Amino acid sequence: MKNRREREKKYFQIQRKGNMKRSKSVFLILFSIFLLPITSYAQQQEPQPVEFRPISESLYEVLGGRGAQGGAYIGDVGVLLIDAKMDKQSVDQTMDQLKKLTDKPILYLVNTHSDGDHIWGNQFFAESITFVAHENCREDLFLPKNNNEPSDWYNPELAPFVPSLTFRDKMDIFLGSKKVELWYFGVGHTTGDIVVYFPDEKTAFIGDQIFLTRPQLIHSYKGGNSFEHVKTLSTMLETLDAEKFCSGHSEMIGREEIMAHIEQMKERQEKVQALVDKGNTLEEIKAEFEEDEGRLVESIFNEIKTN
Ligand SMILES: [Zn+2]
Image (cartoon, rainbow, N blue to C red; front, side):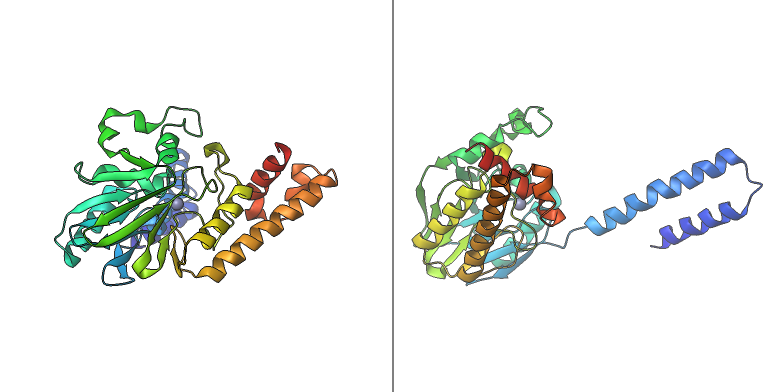
């Protein structure tokens, strides 16, 4: 802040000194205009330190750091982590915090899906860890980027950190006597989102299959689909007697919030459908929604049109 204030002072001094050489003042003004937003942006973006919040003696939410919220389960023989953050500092902090709780080794790292904020940190963990994901998540990693460049995951140095153990419908991992259930309930946010369920704790980690503070993200370019998302979440509630749901970007919630989220998505879909039936264009339909719903409305629109 001090630097910023000094720069601002300099800026106003320049404004007052009308006789200063023009080229120099233009340089300094540009310097102030361009640098100030960058520094304040960097300050805002500095993440909270990584923190393990206990759910039980064995199970923790892993909050903070750069990237999504994840989880950690300390079994009899070792540790299973859920999601990987997205930079070395956050991974180092995760390992430091874990060491305060146990000296058991990390055996598994389960990626809930292929988005960078959940999986890019894999490379900063030990190669000896078994990386686990849904088979579609592994495929999604190699899709071209949004700008059509090839995926970074083709880099051979990243090969040891690409999930090597995949499954289709369900897989159990035993950490001694502790059982961890990995479930796939279908397409939604992407085609490869899984639920990591801890039956003893009745707690499910659902990655990005729910957002509470912003409209649901549906990655159409990864095969995500909002209508399937509704079915997938409904199947999850029918199948698991989970009471707590932890996710990548929201507070821990219960079943009621998931049901409310499903209802809200259905209402949006019905509204878009009704407007499509009236012959409205995408732009006209978007105007009927809040601005931050635009991306989701576009996905729903395209899904209806291609059906
Ligand atoms: Zn995320």
